Length: 315
Image (cartoon, rainbow, N blue to C red; front, side):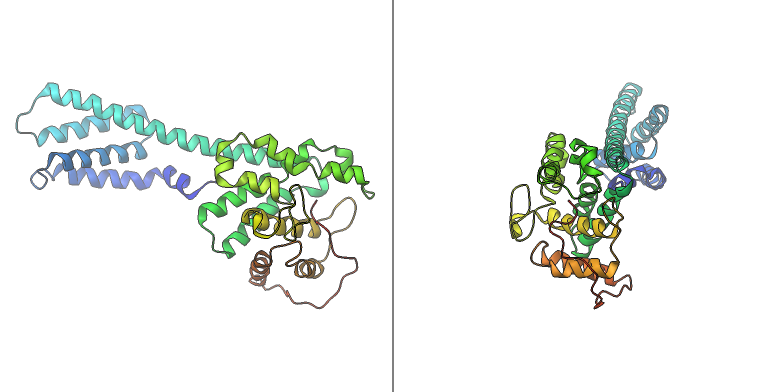
């Protein structure tokens, strides 16, 4: 999932129109702009548009030459030496900007590719939980949008959803795929996956700043303080992790698992309501139910499905 800023940087057609328009204005601006600093600012803006519009070096050489010649046209005392020097300088500036843009876009693409690969690798270990990470990411993002969180926060929550269970890479497949009830030792082992995941990616600085590490480490904390690994309570738990806890539990209950069949939607939503204020943040549950209601699902069914309430569903 690319950010809107990354997508905007890749839309070269937009910047080509802006480049063409500003070059025309630049040509006729000599008699209106007398301030040297303003004139240089306009030149810099045109160089930026050139770098955004054309991502090839030979085109930067050509456009830099055009800009320097137009600039020479406005200079009373024309000098071929000064014009050539400006040509080289403008070319260096435009190329530098172009390289920075390409580096930014490349890093964003590589980061998303890495995240997607890690999520797919995790899900491929268990056929029953295939697409779980992607589902949790989408549910979490929907809740965040319902809570009117900022766009960049919603994007980070989506990425956190893809990676929230990355620590299960360090859990034995025999435990992950066991069809019988887990022993106390096995459950203690699987409860280590948030900490394992945190340790795996804690050195990635963008994850720390964006709250992704919090989502990985705390998505099994409970609102009543009975969760793991830290036993945080209420708003001590980061909001992103509280959102992910609801999304994770919903997908866990509505997905087919090796140890049980998928739960029906009415039962799952009733479980979320019963755990509202206990396992889950009531505000987050309300936001999720509201978003589900917008899809014309009957949220207030009185049907009682068999089975008892989950304790830390989605483990």
